[in-house]
Each structure stands twice: as structure tokens, then as C-alpha cells.
Length: 92
Image (cartoon, rainbow, N blue to C red):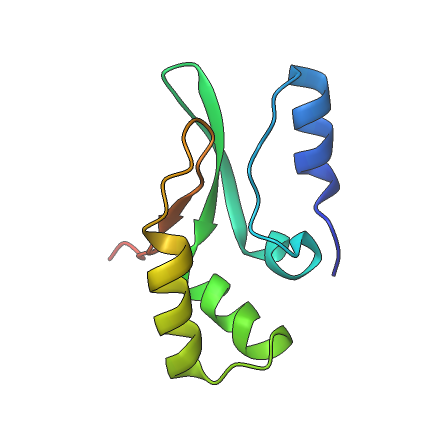
């Protein structure tokens, strides 16, 4: 586990700042994409993986992790670069 070096490299090479959920060492494994909207880059996190990381590394039970992230993270708008949170689906 640890900071995602691909994100660091992308940000440096493209001279962009990307907003991360902190601590990055805990939540970077939940990043599933770097996306672009209107010329601005932002991270896309797997919503369920964010919750799982909170349970595994932040000492929260599942219900607390869901409630905390729904209130503090998933609905937050921090301007340009605000991360997005995806619910992944499988085709078929």
C-alpha cells in the first residue's frame, strides 16, 4: 500500500494538482481512474473501495464508514479537481 506513484507522475508531467482523499496512503488504492472534465483533471474513486479502506485502516465499522464518507466526502464540492466517486457495475 502507499501513495499511487502513477497519480504523482501524471500530476507532475501534466503540471496539474489533483485532490486526493487523505491520507493518500490509505485511499489511493481506491482510485480507479484519472478523468478530465472541461480541461480539468480529477481522480475517480471506487465508492465501495473507499468505504472498505475506511473499515480496514481507519478503525471504522461499515455503517460508520458509509455515514462518515457520505456526509464528508462523497457530497463535497471543493472546486476544480474535486474527485468523483463511482459505483462500479459489471456488464452481463
